Amino acid sequence: MPSTRATGRRGASRGAPMLRLRIGFVLIAMVLSFFGARLVQLQGVDPGSYARMAAAEGAARVTLVAERGDILDRNGVPLADSIQGEMVIADPSLTADDAPEIARILSDRLSIDYFKALNALRGRKEGSQFEYVARRVPSTLATDTLAELKEAGFEGISLEDDPIRDYPAGEVAANLLGYMGTDEPLGGFERTFDKQLAGVDGEATWQSTSGKGIRIPLRESTLTPAQDGAPLRTTIDRDLQWFTQKVLAQSVQKYRAESGAAIVLDTRTGEILALADVPTFDANDPTASREEDLGSRALNDPYEPGSVEKVLTAASLIDAHKAFPRQKFKVPGILSRQDRPIGDWFDHGTIRLTLAGIIAKSSNIGTVLAADAFSPVQLVSYLQRFGLGQTTDIGVRGETPGILTAGEAMTSQTKDRVAFGQSLSVNVAQMAAAVNTIANGGVRVSPSLITGSAVTDDGVTVGTDVATRTRVVSSRAARATARMMEKVVDPEDGVALGAQVPGYLVAGKTGTAQRVVDGVYDGSNTVSFGGFAPADDARFTVYVVVHAPKVDGGGGSITGPVFARIMGYVLGRYGVEPSGGTPSRLPVEW
Image (tube, rainbow, N blue to C red; front, side, top):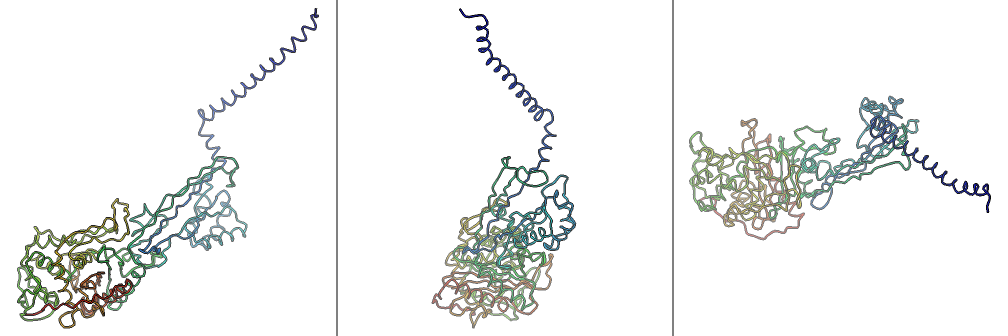
């Protein structure tokens, strides 16, 4: 029988593990209680103070800039793109003490404002560890400047990617493209399609050691990648655009004109291959030009079209069976009408002209006599179908609809003047599309500047995919009008011999109109020429406008030669051979 002592030792051994386990549970409970109390304190009692303490430890944040989408010509050649650049960033906890010296170097090397740099280096807000000093600095310049600062012993300046908007061809299509400010688009396609082009910036954040900006390993970090912008493809042919601007600028300079515009359309598709404004500007340096030169006068400034409009009146009359090319008119030297007499640009007594002759000689009086067959409502109805009095909606902000009085409100006096191109106003794209309707067999194709489709920031879908086709006049009326327009450049009967393109049949019409400035005629003129070639199988329509030339001359002598050079170039560039057709033999007089 075991002794009592032996039995007691064995019992104590069995009880020891249980005791140790109980002590362990008590210790664990105490630790958990401590952490639980601490968690309540952090999250419930005073979360703000502890959040500030965490922030003091350092949360670095960097914007990851999205690369802006390219703007391309019809062949994929960049008209606007992005090149490598840098943003210069300061950590004021490291730069504040040396701010004056660093600011001097940065302002000298980067051409930025000294005092703005100084404020950033010292920190615009208390405790700041991240301040932008300069944006969109060329990479080589930025890295060289950073190297100079480090060599001088200064710390706290760093660089991050920040693409720079670049316009490789400078002035080419600048009035359409627009330009960029530091952080926002300031005109043209850049502004109209900003949502598509801009993309979405990303962001990177991480915890860093206080005052050092150094990432703490294994601590929380987040990354939201940037979403680059989408490209925008236009209908513009860069080389043709360059040539059109060059030829137009030479004419504006030669005739000491105030401004000019020219447009080239693909007759069948309505695609705008070139749209030039003079004066223009370098999109890389817009501040070097006048503010009034930064937009597109061709689309934003209304003007009276003058006699080019006569072909719209003639085509409408023929379509309505109220006139025909060989119709005979006695045209007096002065036509007395209601409020004022109507005259022609050339002096004459009573002459005998056909409708074709009225177009060839550009007679205001003859056009009014022919248009007597129309009521104001009938004339306006046709002009509206040609697209006058309404915007083309091709994607250019601020486009003017022009002015076309409603037929019901139009007096007979106004109708007379509208019939030959005054007392109404248009923009260049409007008028070119109207002339193109005749070239295209009487079908108006809405003009386009965007290949495919794109949505403007105002929510309007534009582009070749949504272009419309509308029958305005019959093919018979369009062909008859085109044959009359051939007489305008006829060496015997016409007034625009300079608009001929050697080897091709050309159909066109001159225009001269008084200019309206601030609501009154200012004594200067707008001269123009619109036409197409080959006349019997049109491929391209070209329309040229020059405002306020300082020399005597009309649409035939000033803008006709510009038309011929541009038309000759585009026909050659696109390999369009002469049609081999015979010139119009319509009689001009009877």
